[in-house]
Each structure stands twice: as structure tokens, then as C-alpha cells.
Image 1 (cartoon, one colour):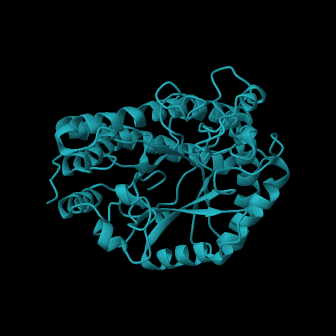
Image 2 (image 1 turned 60 degrees about the vertical axis):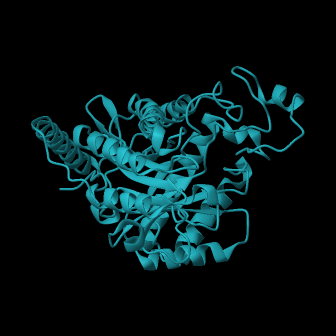
Length: 392
């Protein structure tokens, strides 16, 4: 059963503050449009100049591109509809494709999910265990994304470039240690890594280079092809630091902040930032602690983003409670996200469970969870709208 939320006086004041912030953003957008015809001194960077300073552009998301709910899933499977999962006509689904592999069936599956009503966040990795391409393949990576959109009829408007660049577990890099030194101490047994073949591609400076190149190229191409905006998301990180997880060579929030500062320095428009946050305790008996784990991980990432881009939208593309999901955890994470969105100008626009599909990651599958957990997830989705950045 959905638990009703009645606005308190404090939440009404927060809503008023938020309306004021959105009004400010609308005015800023009008100023930006008025300046759009002026010569661009940045040589193609996504900025406009007002007075003496260049204003870093933050995306204004088309409300028509957003589903009715913040709720989403990673890997929606081949049969579920948004109504099954969320009780709404639409909802988020994160889907993965590999640019270096010839797997047209993946795109065909995604096309069918679009037809069923899912709003796709298309995560594009270079290959399994390699989230970004080497430098000489960046153009090929962009071309693959353009071709994927053509096969999807332009139906995936949110494009997530890579994944968890702070993971390079096959090479145990420590703070201040070079990749050259890491190669000398390479562990012979396989462990998860996002830069298996090209370790330098995990560096924040390299990620920023790829984001800038691909987003600038494809924004123009896709708008010309489909007559609407497409949004490029900075990859989510493995949460927190190397001290908590042997797979992380760099603290997750620090990796995000480093990427964003590089993009800001080059005046590159950032449309959104993905975030990963988990309730690692698991089980109904520790649900309160699991919610705190989730929110602590998310807040550390959000704060790192806000230090650079205070109003850029946040997309939670991965969350769950581990192997034993509970109703209390599901309700708690929806409540935390909803409370944040009522009070902040930095919207959290998606909350995607990892995973729905029972054919992959079965121990974390929401499809295989108990009916009361699925009902709680559906109720939370119906009660919690996506952030409406750019909405009138």
C-alpha cells in the first residue's frame, strides 16, 4: 500500500524556495537564448558570455523526455512493462550496449522496451571490462552511438558514457601510484575491472576528454537527425573510497569531482551525472541502517558534484539492498529522494534498481523479490515524480 505524504509547513517553504530557484533558472535560460546569436569565443565550447565571465551551461531537460516517476530499473528484461514495474505508463530503464561488439540483438531488445513505454538510459561501454575506448577509437565510439540511435529510431535520449572509472581492480593502484608501477604488480587472477585493456582510460582527465569529444559531436548530429535534444550523462562511480573496497583505485566522489572540474575548466556542457548508491547491510532487521548506507553514499557523490555544478541533475542508475531487499528499505530510499527533491534545486531524476531482470544477477533481481517488496517499489514510484528540471 502506498503511504501518503502530506506536505508540512517546512516542505511548503522548501517548495517555495525551489520555485524561486527554478524561476531564476528560467531567467538564466532566456538570457542564454538572447546571447545565442553572438559569436562564441570558446571555439565551440558549450557556453555563452555575459559581461566579463563565461557562464558554464547546465542542461535544461525537456519535460517531455522525463517519465512520470523517478522510479527505474537496470535491465528491464523482455516481458515487463512500466505498468508491471511502476504502475505507471512510463518509467526509467538503464540498458547496456558494447560499442566494440557486433551485437544487434541487444539494440533490438532495447527497441522493444521503448515500444513498451520505458524511457531508456542507454549505457554505452566500449567492451566487456573496458568502459571507454582508446584514444584512436573515440570517433568509432561516437559513430556507434549514432548508429545505435538510428536503430532505435532516436528513442534513447539519455546516453550514459562508460561506467565506474574508479574501478581498476586487476591493477591494484594505490593513491599516488602510477599505472606503470601498477602493471609491475599486476595480480594474475581475474577481478572486476572497467579498464582491463586500456588502464589509462580510467583517468579522470581522459574521461573528460572522451565526454567532451563525444557529446559535442553527437549533440549536433542527433539534433539534426531527430529534431530534439539528447542528453549525455557522466558515468557513475563505484561509491566511496579505495580503503573500503580493494577494487577501487580512486575514491569515487573524488573521481567525479575531478572529471567535472576538468569539464568546467573547458566550459563543456554537462547534462547530468549518474550515481550508484547501495544499502549494503541488507535485511528487514537492518533496513534503517541500509537506508543510511544508501543515502550516505549518494550524498557524498551529490556533494562532490554540487561543489562544481550545484544544479546539474543527478541520475541514480544503480541501487539496491544487496541480496535481501525489504519493504522498509524500498520505502526509505524513495522517501529520502523525495524529501531531497522538495528541498533542493539539484534534482534527483531517476532511482533505478539494480536489477529487474531475473535472467541476470538473480540474487539482486527485483523481479524475483517478494510481492510485498515489489508492491512497495511500485507504490513509491507512483508517489514520487522525476525531478522536473526545465519544466514550466
